[in-house]
View 1: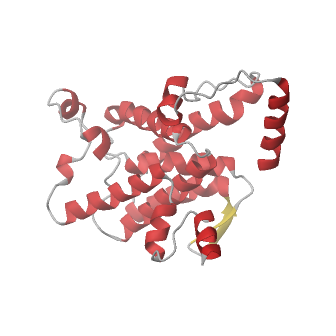
View 2: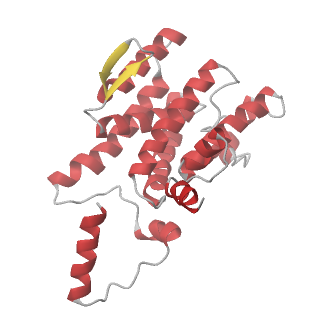
Length: 248
């Protein structure tokens, strides 16, 4: 029994959890609550407790009428309960989770990415007449993941096999066919994602490792606390370096 508990703890789950419950708690914190809020928002709209008119982003509504919740709610509503919503939630939680897990144990870096992307999308929204920005943010995350995993092979609906960098364009084509309109929200998300990808994955190798879009120290301290004392002896530094190599 003790061995079973130990393996469950190593997997991040708990003995006796239902599969859906275990799947929920295995998600990293940012992805978990974004997914939860997205599903809850659609349920509230479906039950007519709230309406989409209370959720979309409007500069006038936010900054003149002081309806500040719209700064968040615009990223949470993907439409009423439907197959289309399930499609969006699947891609949201899958690629958000993959990115968050790859950013390390601390949520500082991933939450900074979300803050960057949401801020840019909110600034672009009035210019492009985009009122619900969840699909754009999801497209940003899909694009970043796809560029960081160029060798990964994917299958879309079991019909089309391609490598990861083509995923955003396949989704855009699918959206075009389904809705018969140019998917400007996905295109905007790809542009925002490319800026982040360039300054985090391409720019540093060209400019001596400089990373202009890394989270500042004050943001990391919010999630990680004060850094540990680095005034240690050279012997301790050697031991720490050896341990770091072994962990990888």
